[in-house]
Length: 163
Length: 96
Image (tube, rainbow over all chains, first blue to last red; front, side, top):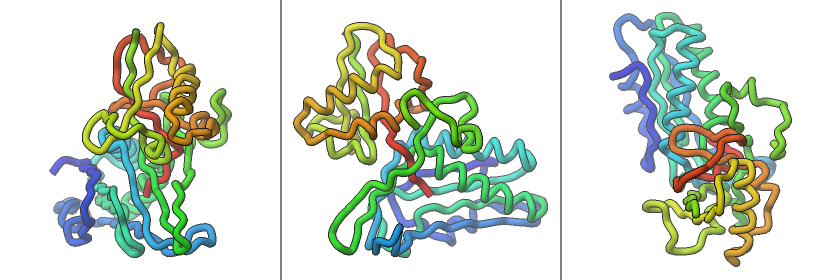
């Protein structure tokens, strides 16, 4: 397995599959993050969500983020990331991020970095279905076309087109 | 004439015209440009095209917050589209 594996899938994410993907002998730590569909968002009761993705670019963005993390916390870090698309019920897993490293600190830090960057940079969208029958695309983070696309670089500045 | 297929994702999908697809399960619209056009100017072309389809589009704020991209990267506003191509319009993202 390569150092970085990223996937977008329209099928259930199995935690047992994620567990098999990362560790090897020289790594003493593995951090696995699982994100689930939550039943309430901004005070509205959510019954399900649907994820849409521009998959070819999303995989490239995931990979770039992992490479950034390897520059920060060590080039021997290994990553496995999988994100769902399609219709998910409350309680289903929407994303899994597995990171392994020689020592635990690097895995914790890299996992958090990857998740936060995915939320603001990956071309993925979420439509929520509410208990009252309404639906809404969650209006998240505007993308920008700078050479440095990290969330920190893009946060808080002004563009001619408004984000 | 420069023809730009624009794939629609997320909140844009509902404004597509049935039957116009870039590939399976991906709706697209076609912009026809008379001359090379910067990405920033494509937003106005896209807004006019979507409004002309009769599918209920009236959210220019959404376009202002959206980015154009190809399969490799988000395009910078100054990038000039000078030939036929396939792009995607990416509304604000919400993965994870």
